[in-house]
Image (cartoon, rainbow, N blue to C red; front, top):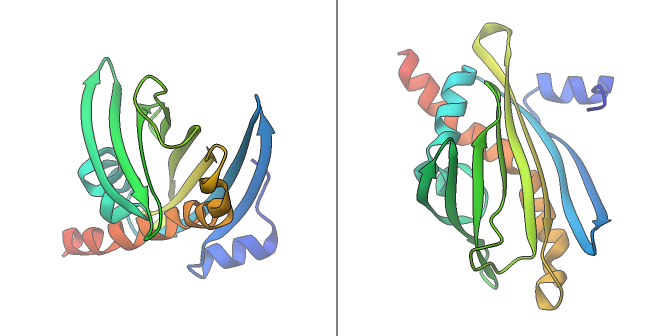
Length: 179
């Protein structure tokens, strides 16, 4: 990760989200997404607990219509997701793994039916002073060819908003617990 610029540090301290969009081609696919950062007034354990419970995902992640835990074996969970907007939905299954004490990784399970070509990424939550956390979400998505490609920019923008929506989901719960 590149260090934050002074402007990015100021934005994060002021409660704004910082995003670094990206697009690239790899293994015949065209990926969009990037990495976004958001400071949240909640302990890392609370944020990670919220993200570890897929029942929270429709409220905590942008454009997530449903998230269903299919199974969990040896630290790997399979989660079926339906995400989309008013014109287009995508159903696919991701593998979910707690990589370390700060990070949850995910990647598409290609053995299940999927409306996108590929997706992978991570949620990382680092402790900050004063009971705050820095949420980092990184994701890369290949929508595949055809009509979905027309929505690539909108989908990338939506993905980059994830830390803000996680903050908006988690912060009220953290405040309620502290009372």
